[in-house]
View 1 (spheres, rainbow, N blue to C red):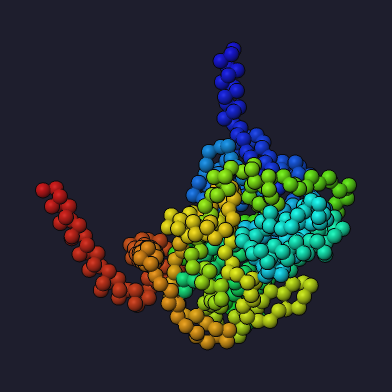
View 2: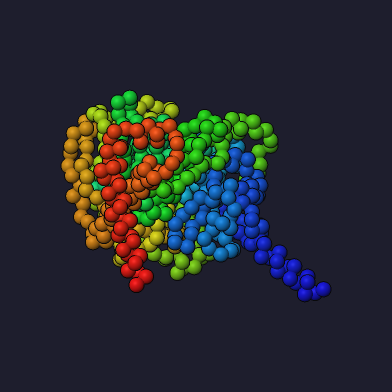
Amino acid sequence: MLSRLMSGSIRNLEREYNCTVRLLDDTEYTCTIQRDAKGQYLFDLICHHLNLLEKDYFGIRYVDPDKQRHWLEFTKSIAKQMKSQPPFTMCLRVKFYPPDPAALREEITRYLVFLQIKRDLYHGRLLCKTSDAAILAAYILQAEIGDYDPGKHPEGYSSKFQFFPKHSEKLERRIAEIHKTELMGQTPETSELNFLQKAQMLETYGVDPHPCKDVSGNPAFLAFTPYGFVVLQGNKRVHFLKWNEVTKLKFEGKTFHIYANQKEDKKIILTYFAPTPEACKHLWKCGVENQAFYKLEKSSQVRTVSSSNLFFKGSRFRYSGRVAKEVMEQSAKIKREPPEIHRAGLVPSRSCPSITHGPRLSSVPRTRRRAVHISIMEGLESLRDSAHSTPVRSVSHGDSFIPRSRSQAADAGEGAAVISDEAYSPSDSVLPTPVAERSLELAISRQINGAPCSIEEEKESEAGTPLVGDVVEFGPDGSVLSRGEAGVSPSSEVEQVNKFVLSVLRLLLVTVGLLFVLLLLLIILTESDLDIAFLRDIRQTPEFEQFHYEYFCPLRRWVTCKLRWFGELLIK
């Protein structure tokens, strides 16, 4: 009896596993779920724990053993998606940024979005000019410590906080000045709302960057926002495509293509290279989901998307969930008492030290605080004053770029938009590719220069080396500007050769397949007795009869003679 109970308990344990989800305030939610449980079950548990109803903006992110980030698919089994063994560790993050955060129905939703954008600000994803950065940091300060009090906040108190990857004493003084003079009397709710409204107007709002290289070998960050697809290079946004202009997203191996129509006679194709095929597939899936969420009117319009073509099998993917318009309509129907919000306040934060100061640092081990944080985009700083743009294959003349226009403002002027005083170079925790050992010296230099790091960055630090190429670059008027002259490393040359060889092999395979089909058709025409109308018509043509008697019959006799001779040789 005891052994039977023990075996039953073991079987139950094998069917269950522990799962830990790190929330946006850096607390952890741990639960035990069945092995066959789907992602939707875990997500519903977390939303119930947070008392969250407007949950369509959020998702669960995890990192596989190869340091590639993924969004958990809610329609599939959790165990089948994870490449590691349980227990599993994941993170709750904002997956689809609200186009207008102030229009969110409930304060709990706005607070969670506030935590996400504050995290983006610290990791360098939400990059902005110094004047905007000071205002955003002051709002955070007001929301978390309240009004300025000379007794509690001595001179230089703002330097105890870290809101950005790096900042100057001048910026710290400006943050303290705004906090002291302009924000007195604001409640945490008001400060958070003002923070969201300010952040929403920035060029990098909602950016979850994917490191790539363009066809000229220039480093770039690709991202999908509530307004469309953007490309960031140096300190500029060099491309922006509205969602209604994007017609197709496709990937093949490490190569990612964006097809778009800008105006009636303007069609462009943007091409980029991801560091790994897995990173490129993740980029493609993110693009498919964002386009469906923000562009479509109803979830019933969602279709399965395929990246396959004649020479590449590709992948099939379908977004499962409601679209933005449906989410807003559903939120308007919420009628309940506002849930109580337990703000993090001065609770230690492991991945976002922007709310840490003084004694709070003692909760994090010194060796972990000094974890090296590595940037994969070596040389990106050299682009800060440049205007490199990605070459565009165009089929017509006209403007190759239409800048973003907010619903609250008129269209901006044409050209590359400056997003910051510095080059866009977010922390490693946002980059979905493995760490390169050759970046260690760069990491040490960044640490000496005062660049911050965190436990989450240590766990998710990632880097890679994409392909580079050499193609013609077109200007805004469609004229040829230059050819890419980026240096090609030996490893990238080998990758290009391998890619060419694979393309040739695919072409040969398709050619052999077509020849085999033609041979089968020829045999059916000449040797079979099938009495089908179109076959009979072909057989009765003079050309076919001439071919049959003058070429095919002699060839058949020759092949038969050779086969008979070879068979006799084998017998002897």
